[in-house]
Image 1 (tube, protein in one colour):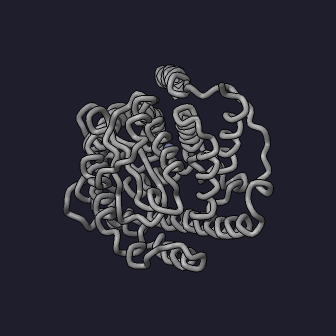
Image 2 (spheres, protein in one colour):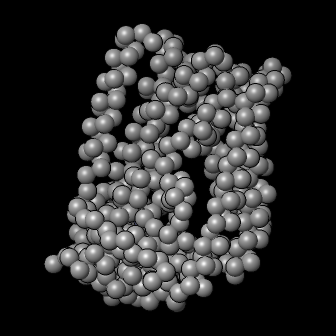
Image 3 (tube, helix red, strand yellow):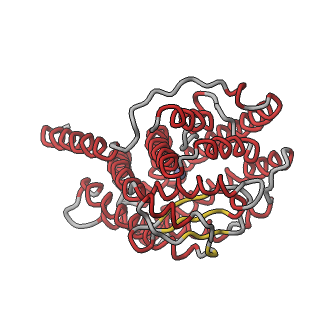
Length: 390
Ligand SMILES: [Zn+2]
C-alpha cells in the first residue's frame, strides 16, 4: 500500500467513526435492563413451541446461506467461461452474467423456500407454495432490474476515463442517491386503505408527526412499518395487526412505535448508516476484483457477486446492532407517548404466540438474524418504564 493510499484510508476511518457516533446518538435513556426469565413470562408449552419452530427456521437459514455461498463460489470460479461467448459488449456481458448469478441464487434458495412453507403449515401458520416459489414475480422482477441498473452504474463508472481503481469513491454516493430516491418514491407505490381510530390524532400531537396511516391487505403476518421522506412519509399497518386478537390498545402502541421512527428521523438515519456501509462494500469490491481486471471487465462480475454476498454477511451483525438500537428508541418513544407499558407487554407476548418468534433466541441467532430487540428485551423495557419513568 502506498503512503498516499494509507493516509486516505486513515482519513476515511476517522470520518466514518465521527459520522457513526453522530448517527448513534438517540433519546434512549441510559438504563440497565434487569434480567427477566422467559419461563416466568410465557407458559411452558407456548415457549417450547416457539423455540422449536424458531430453531428449525434457524437451521433453514444456515443451510440456505451455506448453499448460496457454495453455488456463488462455483460461479465465481467457473462463470468466467461464459464471458468469451458473448458479443454484447463488456457491460452487456456483465449484466448477462449478473442475470445468471441471480438465477443461481434464486434456484439455490428454492428448496428452502418450499421447506419453510411446509414447516409453517405444520405449525398452523399461513404460507403459500406458489407465492414462495414463482408467485412473487413482481418482487423478483424488481430485484432483477435493480441488479442490472447497479451493474450498469458500477461497470460504467469503473470504465470511465481516468477513474482507474478509484471508481468506488464516486460509486457509493450514487447508490446513496438512489436509496434516497427509492425511500422517497416507495410509499406512493404501496397504496393501501386509510386507517381511522380515535387515538390517532392525539398520538400525532404527542409525537409531533402528522402523516397518513394506511392499512395494507394481502399479508398474513401481523406487522407495521414507517417509511418515506418529507411529503411521502407514511405509516403502514399490515391488516392482521388491526384485527383480533390484536386489541385497539395494542394497535395504539404499534402506531406510537411507528410514529416514533418518524419523529426521530429514523429513515434519514437508516440512509446515513447505509452510506457508511456502502463505502467499505464498494472498496472491498474494488480490491477483490483487481486481479480479474477490475469492475469494468465482465469477467469480474461473478467474483463481484460472491464478494458482495460475503461482505453483506459480514456487515449483517453490525447492521443488526444499528437497527436494534433504532427499534429500541421507537419502543421508548411509544412508551412515552402512550404511557401504557401494559399494552406494550401484551403486544409483545401476543407476538410470540402469533408469529412463533423465540422470545429469547440463542446467541448466534441474535447476532445474525435479530434486527429488533428480542421480545424478552422489549418486555424488559416496558417494565423498566413502568418502574422508573415519571
Ligand atoms: Zn420499528
